[in-house]
Length: 187
Image (cartoon, rainbow, N blue to C red; front, side, top):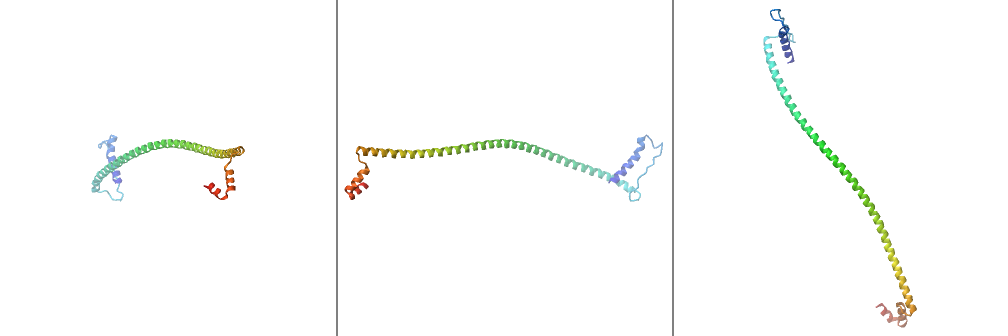
């Protein structure tokens, strides 16, 4: 097909060249040299008529190809525009997520700090509570010891004043009636 186009262009150039140079056919004769076909045979008149039909078919094929390429280009251009829009949307969403991530990270760090402080405070409170509990238990023991000491002192005072205590009464009853006194004491 290229070969027929180049032959047609060479022929047109040879025919139209004298017109562009300002020469007319009367002034000088124009010699036309046509290239020989590649197979070594002379061109036939039927082949020259087919040449123009082939060029029209080639032009129509070229137009169809150009239309197809144009349609494909339009389709690809619209797809590219959609992809650009999606890219822009994804970038915007990515920026929003980055901002949310920074804010969440800040809140997480703040919460971790508060939890650590709360944990330290709970540990201090537990230590203080254990100390208080030990102090209360120690104080209770001291109070018991003090109560025992007071009771012993009161008992001694009663003995000095001539009063009888349970121990003295129980001992005296055992001495008088060893059997029945024990039964009455246990009741």
